[in-house]
Amino acid sequence: MTQRAPLVAILVLVSATSTTVFTQAPEPPPSTPPPDRNPIIYVFHNLVRDAKRMPTVETAVTLGIGGALALAVHPADDTVNERATAGGRRQPYIAGSAVGSGWSQIGFAVGTYTTGVIAHHRAMAHFGADLVSAQAINAVITQGTKFAVRRERPGNPGGSYSFPSGHTSSAFATAAVTWRHFGWKAGLPASAVGAWVGAGRVQLGRHFLSDVVFGAAVGTAAGRTVTIGHGAKKVTMAPTTVPGGAALTFTLVER
Image (cartoon, rainbow, N blue to C red):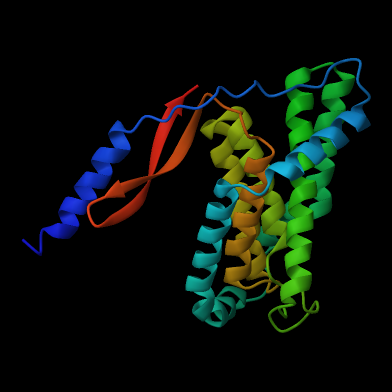
């Protein structure tokens, strides 16, 4: 009987997850740039709104998972870095590092928004505005963490600001916004680009693996924050009781 207890608990949790229904007020549809509003004012307004949305359970969970994974891979940082950098810098990763640069990502965001406004293409302008907000929020969190932690880079080639990887966080912020706007068909390739950028930061000897892992979590949290209410589906989360304790249940909800 004792040996079956874990299995029973799992089955109860799965059952609760599949049958629990969460009731909540419908969210307003995401706003798009009105034609008569100043584009700069619009982006600033969205940025302030999105910054206020940052402290959420979802953000805490995302950063918590990223922190746990970074802590888990931390003991292997030196070994991974030594093996990855053997043979010198490789051109594909040099290119990936350029793509993940904060300036490249911000330029893409601003360029997308500007193009959408000029072309009167609301969907593109909305996508670009979310990218701008995501990059701004991501930069604040990433740089703030860098200055707080002050971890030395591998071999200390660039000072004490290794954790987390800013290139990786920027790329994953873009990927998260892309997922929410266009779904997995665009989001998956965007995430692959983020992984390419992160791998490059390790291969080029600029970051440890744990820097990259947490950078991906930071970027994802920033991108998801600015796109709250987007998409045709969402996952709701709520506490529930199970025999002998409590658990979190997750339910996929159609909008």
